[in-house]
Length: 114
Image (cartoon, rainbow, N blue to C red; front, side, top):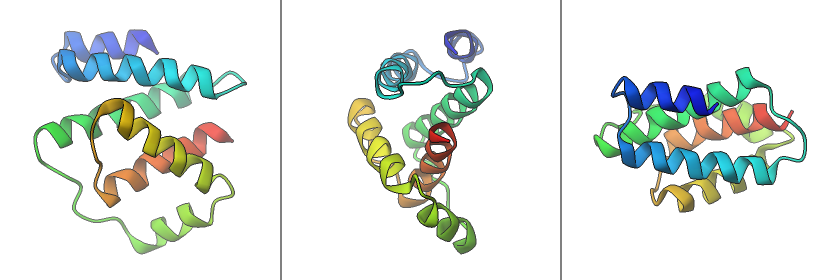
């Protein structure tokens, strides 16, 4: 997963600041999850989080989330844990995601918790 982050930085998709925040999140995730996360799921989550942080930096938030997606996420058995993790990630990154952005982050965290 660190290679993915380095590639995003080297290709100027993310800034050095976002790269550092994502590395902190990576340490946090490693500490929180007792079982190994698949490379594919981990990279998908980190890539989405990277782009969410870019959108926050550029003040270009996601405009809308389909209500059916939101309902599915809230109904997921891992929703509460994923939402708590997303809030901790906001603290680590020193950002506040929009409701819509946070829903997508929670979706990826629910996927990691499976």
